[in-house]
Length: 445
Ligand code: NAD
Ligand code: UGA
Image 1 (cartoon, helix red, strand yellow):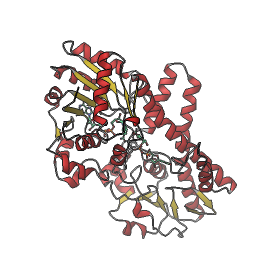
Image 2 (cartoon, helix red, strand yellow):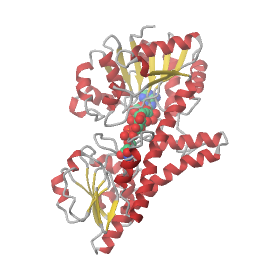
Image 3 (cartoon, protein in one colour):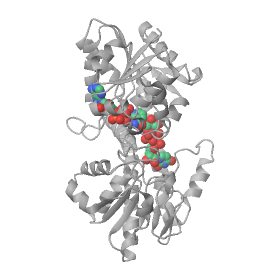
Image 4 (cartoon, helix red, strand yellow):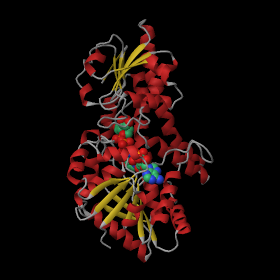
């Protein structure tokens, strides 16, 4: 079937950029991105410089497609009923309460989306899982759809998203692969083909991989776990390098030159951040435990343990330096986003490192080119701080010039280009973007 109308539920970091690229590459398809968040939709429809997601190249695409074949709306039910294909791109955070709390993915937003789809649909729909989901979620979605509407046919596909923030548009233009899972029934195969036809508008067919639904769901969790595992591997070795005078940058280069290993995701860092690696590994661990695979669960838990270790190591390095040098308890943090070129700070290592300093009664100065004061305060409130307390202990800066002239150690936590040329001769600049290399008390990269 040639799809002409798409609805995407969820106008966040995945839903909006993904739909913007489909709209650009498929001018013959009308796409409506819907969200329960009224303010967010207002922003997507508002001035181009205040879009809710910052991604290089995104605003240019929005300018070309918005109100032509790309629409943002709060009219969820109508938009669903008007479409032939519905993408679910809602958030799937770690569950905070109930069975599996702290580990399993919270599927409440996915389940409520499925209910809304069922209740709004007066004709057959292809429902596409775009959110990252535990293996076998499609079964549950189908159950909800059928239970709430048995008068139309629903086909459920899994089409996980592999874009990384900061390079989302580039990634969507040139995906390493597009993964589509579907049933092997006649209607399942036809639904898969409809989605293949969309991607074929710009992705070479040999990069479009069609598999069964469960493989697609699990491959997404597994890919994120494998990427995070490489980071924890190199970060764990950075600790050993500091003890042995081996140079982690040299070690990383030497390892990566083995073509069987490859160079990507071997950059030493203050630990991986972002909304997905931690939650997806926790989800994987939970699934393994559910199936009684405790050894496998423990193996993946180790990746998270090293990530926490790296963050506390950073605090210890700087705290020891400050004590040894008899300095006042004050540090500056450059970079709050979890990586460069995004305004997203979810699970950023800066949050956890700041937490260590706050617990030890430090004053913290913070600057990030894209993350504002309100967001930083919210990130810390989530750890249990009160805003009054934070306003007393944290000073916020709007530019690099002012913060770097303060007389206290500086921690460079995000690899923003504007931090590249800082004077790294200064012994109190700790650059954690790439490398933790110890030479007396000076850390350099
Ligand atoms: P997000 O929080 O930025 O966006 C999700 C949006 O869904 C929010 O705006 C929320 O208001 C909306 N929403 C929730 N329930 C809704 C409902 N019932 N009806 C309408 N709207 C609803 O999340 P995100 O970062 O875009 O991630 C979405 C999914 O994609 C997650 O499963 C994530 O794991 C996965 N993913 C994320 C990335 C990434 O880089 N952020 C990459 C690949 C996959
Ligand atoms: C990651 C994956 O790369 C995407 O393929 C996936 O779609 C996405 O998660 C998801 O499911 O959400 P993202 O988290 O946006 O993308 O960004 P990454 O580039 O993977 O970086 C994640 C974290 O790892 C960042 O904090 C980054 O600084 C860190 N990192 C990355 C390292 O510490 N070292 C590296 O070598 C690479």
